[in-house]
Each structure stands twice: as C-alpha cells, then as structure tokens.
Length: 190
Length: 190
DNA sequence: TATGTTATATAACATCTGTTATATAACATA
DNA sequence: TATGTTATATAACAGATGTTATATAACATA
Image (cartoon, rainbow over all chains, first blue to last red; front, side, top):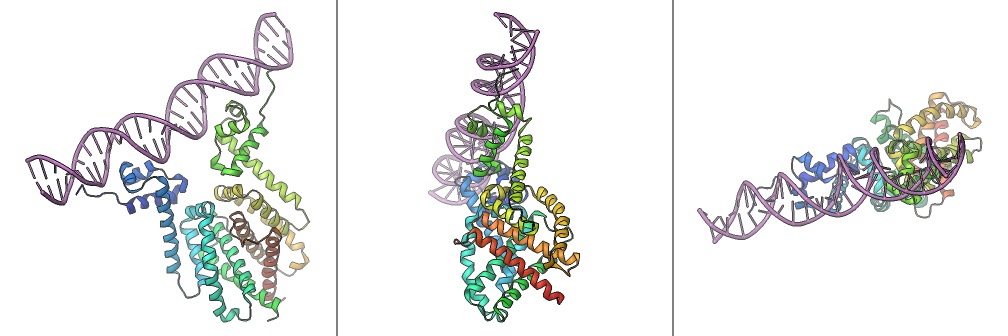
C-alpha cells in the first residue's frame, strides 16, 4: 500500500555518516543529507521525528562501527584488543573520533565504567601480571587507557611524527605497556 | 576626535572567550558577543574586519593564556612544566582545550615541532637521562607527550576516576615518566 | 477502474548566521 | 558655535538552518 520506498532509514544514516566523516558531526544538515541521497528532505522526516532523533541514530551507528572494529580485533587479549581497535577507529574515522571524544564524553564514560571490571578480571588471568593486587592492576590499566587515548587523539590529529606507521603506533603502545608493567614489578620487588 | 570608546578590542575578545569557554568556539556569534557586552554588533566590526579576524585574535588570546600558565609553572624542568601547564589548561578551560585539540591540530603541530628540539636539549642536560642517545630521548619524549595529552583529554572530559584530584593527575604523570625512563635504562642495560 | 495510503517533492515559515548601509550622537578642534 | 570624525545603534540583506503544509504520484486493494 503506497509507492516503493526509495530512501530507507539506513540509507539516510549512511549519508549522514558520510557527511560527518568529512565535515564533522556539526557539518550535517537535513538538506545536505537529502542532496547526498538525491532526494528532498521529506524522506528524512518520514523516518525521523526531528534532527535529534536522527543524531541519536547516527550515534548508535558510530558505536556499532567501533564495536565491530573491536570484534575484528579479537585475539583473546582484551587489553591489547581495545587499544588497537580504538587506534584503528581513530585513524580510519578520524573526524568522527574527534567529535565523539569532544561531544559525547558521557558515552565514553559509561563505556569505561563498563569495561573496567571486565579488563581487570582479564588481567588477573594474565601470567605476566601475576602478583599484583587489584589496586595495582587498576593503576596499570588507567595508565594504559590514558596512553591509548593520547595515542589515538594524536594519530587522529596528525600530531605524531610524519614517518609514524600504524605498526609503529602499535609498537609504541605495547612498548609503553611493557614499561608500565616492568616498573610496577620493580616497585614491588618482583 | 570622536566619542569615548566603550567597547575595546580586549573587551570584545573577553566576551568571545567567555562564550567559547561555556558553549565551545562554534557557540560564538557576533550577536551573542554584542549581547554579552550590552552593545550592538557595530563595535565588533569597528575593531575586526570580519569574523575570521576575530577568531584569529581569539586564538592568540587562548595561546597567550596557555603560555601564561606555562610561565607560572616554571621550575626549570621544562619536561615537567609543560605537562603540568597543559594539564592545568585542560582542567581550567576544558571546553576550549577540547576545541583547540579538535580544530587547530595545525597550531599544536607547529607547537610540537618547535618545542621538540628545545626539550631534547633540556633532556640532554638532565643527569637522570645520562647515557641516552638522541633517538632514545626522542622516544621517551614522544611517549610522555602522548601520555600527557591523553591525561589532559581525559581530565577535560571527566573520564578519569571520580576521586582523581589534580595532585593525583600530576602524580600519575610523573610516575609514568619514571616508568618510561626506568624501562629505557633497563633496555640499555644502564 | 476507483479509492485509500503513503513516499516523495516543493515551497514556505521562522530563526539563526555574517555583513553592511544608514542614522545618531558624542567628542575634538577650528 | 560650527565642523569633521567616529563610536555606536538600528535595520535590512542574503544565506543557512530546522520544520511543516501542501501537492503529486505510485502502489495495493476493493
């Protein structure tokens, strides 16, 4: 009952994502999305109540992509996986990554709070980290989270040395992880 | 010759800075600045050719503030000073700090490139860092820069543990600096 | 075929933006 | 006092924005 649907919800979010990736989330407008799809704004308002609802859907899409990158990186060492997945996201979707960090600190905060216990549990299984109590593990994790976010931000901003490849980034990530762990062991006298 | 000046350049930049601090740099508009000053937009256009020129002046103001924070933190150890000053800026002017990192990667890039040789030189004087060649010092510096930016971003976003005081942040900054240096020494067999 | 439903296009509205033309009024100087 | 200069206010313009009222046309079904 009714004409064929030419512009689906997914279609619209795709277009919005494309614009966000190039011009930033604030670069999105209803007309730009419509132009990108070769339509008017009507299909957008057919699918979304207003611009806020569309932004919400876009955010879900972004989160989905970051989750997918994390799944693709699954080596059983979540400590490492999260670092690399976040780095990949920062490099491959740099504009959106920056916006995400800028605008939705809330999402990241919830994410961190949810991931923390899981990672601590995972670290307790790691033989390399034997002998540390939970407080010490938390400090190690925090240091690594800080470093990993710093690395991602700098990568997304082109602030790393020009000749710094993705492999170099991953190397410096794991090298610093070693630094932190080795020093923690020394402090403990292990 | 002419009526008294009620709204100076500095006045205008002050108002713009206030708005930027609360709503972000994109939150600025000519009318908002005028409203904040209790004037019309005329004085703004009297002092600035257009909005771009105003933004440039605002950026200079921001850079000036960050420089001032750095001066206030001068203990003779530029390595530490830069870390703490940047952290203070991130905490005290969090919205602007995020915008700065997001929008003007160019400025930061130039800043880093200018600071790098100075810091390396400074590190070579540091007895704690004796025995490292320039390449190794560069790696240490890069790791610290990454960590410091990560810490600043997380502080500005409220992503650090709730009970994390400024002192805690500074402690974790210097603790990680130690980690990196100690591990580098171990690697070298010093 | 006729009808109801709905996906889409168009155009208008209100509001925000930067910018500018014009008018006003304050002040220094002749 | 008269004049020139200029700081300021006002209002308008053009363009972008979100939103909506209306019209059109495609499709399923009776």
